[in-house]
Amino acid sequence: MAVVNFEIYKVLGTLSEDKDGKSKQLTCISWGRYNPKFDLRSWNSDYTTMTKGITLSLEEALALKDLLNKVDLEQAYNESIAERQAAKAAEK
Image (cartoon, rainbow, N blue to C red; front, side, top):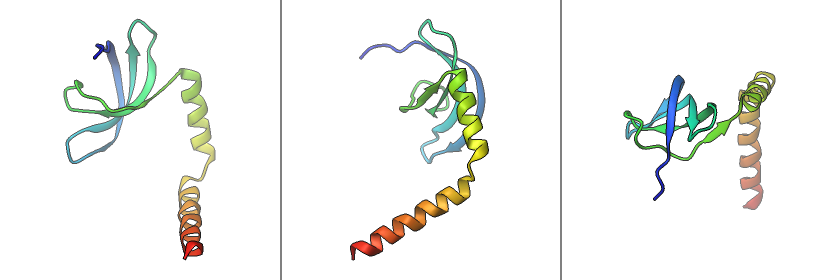
C-alpha cells in the first residue's frame, strides 16, 4: 500500500465522535507537496488512521459555506424524510 504524506496545519472543528473514538473533523491539510486545502473526514485520536473524506479548495469551501447559509437545512431534511415515507407507503 502506498504511503500517503500529509500535514494537518489546523483543526478547525469537530463535528462528531463515533463509538470507536474516531472524530469527524474539518481540518486545513496539505496532501503531498500541494498547498493546504479544507478537508472533512474522520480521524483516530493520533491522526494515524483516517476514513474516506472530502477535500475542498478555498473557492469550493466558500461556495459550500454560502450554500449552507442559504439553505434551510432542517426544512430540507424534514421534507426529504416525508418524501421517503410517502414513497415507502406507495410501495405497499
